[in-house]
View 1 (cartoon, rainbow over the protein chains, first blue to last red):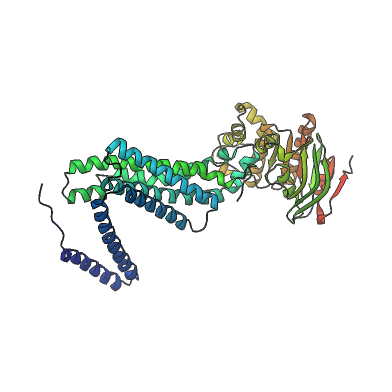
View 2 (view 1 turned 180 degrees about the vertical axis):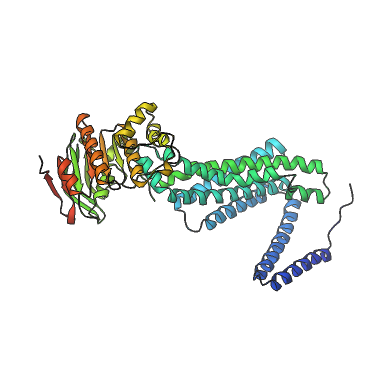
Length: 259
Length: 214
């Protein structure tokens, strides 16, 4: 294994010069997006620097309180983000279902992953707990976001078919089955697609990061396989919980459609 | 069968008292916005009234399980939903919803002739015209064999000849099988020719009278 090349601050500045060149090209071509590119680059840099220092602190001072706090912060941010992205389309009970599905789905997968598969010790070891939690929660967040949109739009677009099914004696579950199945498919599809292309079309970020920082590709791949299966499990479980509970919020206790 | 007392629903419907008898053909007429569809939706428990009381066979419908009620009192909306798939799929879907045994093709073809739809069971339902879709949806609820049919303008998309054929068949079927038929119609002629009773919801004042032909 070669020695790891530690990036100096000047090498990072060179990476920014690269972005500056890109911005000049964008400007010359008249694509007015240079502001967005600049802001997102700066934002990403600041966020990662802060996260880096925070992680150094957390790794040097491992504590169950910190670990749990970080987990709660990630869950809250993810839930807030899903609700924000749904752009006011969702009612109060659907928000509760989003929160419940995220917490139950990701935490149960996280516990299984950390304690049964990786078997970390102590149980709050931040070096494993925090990055793995981040990956499971982040991917589940993307999944549910897609699922929320598909479920809400699908229920509205198929209102007549759903109510028509109720008139024929269907239960709410039967009447919304197609919409629920579609929402699940669209939520899980990005995870399936990324698994199919993995290792051939692209090397996944986590694995690339590990390899660049000196880990053996085989170890990196072992972790990648495990984490991908963890992500698949977490996304599936969260989305299943969400769609199975979520469609019910469109009906009242008298099995009447409320759209 | 149905009894309504002081039923109010938003600003759309206000009924002091109404009785709808079983084993009869009842037509509901009235100008648009008079609450005809709302009345059927209330009877199908797709919505509940804001105040008042609706009973079915002497029991407050609020105390009857909605799904059980809809399997006995089945509604055909004006814009009949057509599901993806073939004509056979569309005919059988109601039976699948209600866990009833499915019928074989010969019975399904007899339903197609009852509704005057000269199609193959394997034809895709997407290719049907508006009138054909309406008849297909009617065939679907006939297969469900409910006690009460709530039909919202079942012949609105049909030409006069087909309309006459379908309504005559429906009325005959209702009488022969002791069913109850409650239908909204835009045609006073249909109402007067085929119903035992006409309910006129026009201008908010409900006129409840025996049909002239009785």
